[in-house]
Length: 334
Image 1 (cartoon, rainbow, N blue to C red):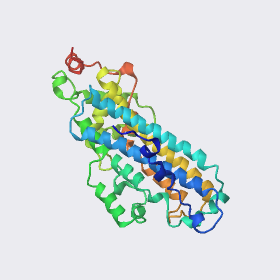
Image 2 (cartoon, rainbow, N blue to C red):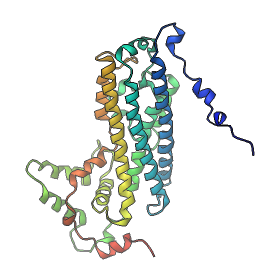
Image 3 (cartoon, one colour):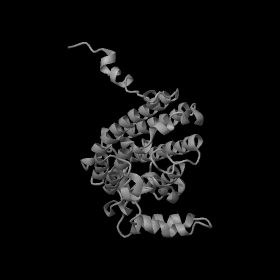
Image 4 (cartoon, rainbow, N blue to C red):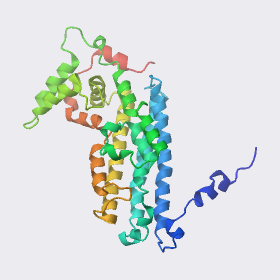
């Protein structure tokens, strides 16, 4: 067994030799370009790890059978929680970037054109793998225009692959506990009872939510990523999350929302930094700068359909009792 040497294992010669400021090439004094480079290289390393974690979760769900009571779902939750922690770090890295003032940035900004963070392939791949389809993107006509042909082709190829949100939809649709066999024959279907209960809890101004209930849980809609069957399963998990069998599925759904929130916080912080650094100027890649980022932040929530389901929750004390046959089916075998 050969000895492993720390600098060789981490390939530090490559990593630490990968900073080549444009200002040095042009004989321009721009001290903070090194900071700018290192921060963005660190982002790309974190993106690589996030893609590694998200890819592993996608593979868990691709076999069409997730072991909800065993290790697979727990692994998926753990890895998605790691992704959320990484996203928190990405937000905090902005603190370091903001030690550079707008004048410091202007020392080298024009030397970067047309390079832009908008050309980050890894971030585009991450959004695509999570479930952001091309037609759902803000400024989709511009989205791949700044990429090299091979990178544009790579992004377009991802449109043919299953995304995490699509796999989650299929997983939720497979949940059996709302099937008629678990509920007493001759009684009103459970979800009809739940709809009546929900309607009775509406306060003035929320009357339109009764129509929304039908759209989400019965009819479906082309503008939603989750099917009615998946939404029924998800809200059932959320309402009965204290049942042992639903604790991991509930944590998994929460982890997806945490990732959406983490990405939104990162985009929000990015907007503030860009506005602070360049004001109303165009981005180096030709975008509208902070204006584009604001539009993307509002449009690029991937797991919004799950967050919407909080509209249809009500107090635990009002929940219908689960039938004995269903409780037996949900129980863990001795």
